[in-house]
Length: 452
Image 1 (cartoon, rainbow, N blue to C red):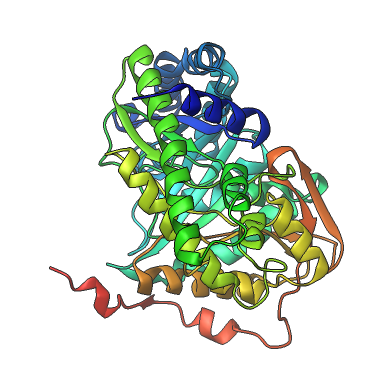
Image 2 (image 1 turned 30 degrees about the horizontal axis):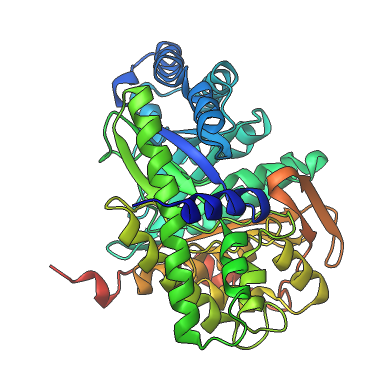
């Protein structure tokens, strides 16, 4: 039973604590757009997206006005484009441009799915798409790309890891005149999920319906404010506070998802209950950890605090919705989180600590600017380390790093908007993993994969 207290509490969360729906994302299957003629296939892609998502933005805006709930982004995810390239051949960038035309026509913020799944090896279309990523991200504005290079079941495809180190660096170089923005739209995954509504890693998995609506909620500021009301609580009591707060946030996401699904006439998929920060003050995961008792994010105790936060968010969210999915937890993107930015600038938060934190957070090394002279094999080493954490722990991990071309440690990149700004972080370049990376092959799946 909803009472006046619940209504007033929600209004306060929205107006004072930065509560919002971070995204409604329409997933669209493009499998029926395959054609041996790439130009015909691109036209089918454009036609299907604009037909199904033509009212997505308006629907989101109407729900915002009627319910007073901010919906920050309206997005689309599509079938990994490498699958279409396998059927059509030709220049994969033509698909990227077709997706961009669809983004322009529908008015969405981003379309994700310029992607390839190569965790066990390269199939037809995969390598062609991967090698085209730098051009695709340079020649479009609203397209996001991801590559899954490992999984708990398959191990890690080190041929793909080596290639992705080169691709990340090339993407930075080709967009160096725009703060290397291409790399902010490129994610390398281990254990990628099929129903992720968040960019840049969203794609529409082959096990998904033809069309579906997913919702990504947010609310770091709400969680921080709730903890602040209990300055003398024990950690167990704080966990209960976080669970109750996550429940309320997720219920709002469920409401918006059901309403968008009804109005658009497509099935409702999942609520991703991840705490997604922004550079705005009062909307930071790092500040939640500091409210829990850390003097600053990055010091000893940070990983334990983050583990507790992530667990409590999941426990509260699953009570609020029967269809929780995506990534669901706490994101720690450095340039997108005001507290992370401050901790990185002060030197309290370092790359090695971030890697430890990714063992217990929602995803991985996210939106981290690194020196522009970082070699491709070092980027590959970072990717391999992060994939190993995901593989062994049966969780999704990811790497979204931005080599800041012609810049060095201590300088800054500034993307503006939700992508934020932040310092270029130190990377250990004294020794090289080059020989290890060039051995190639596949790191075998761990014992955890033998669960049948």
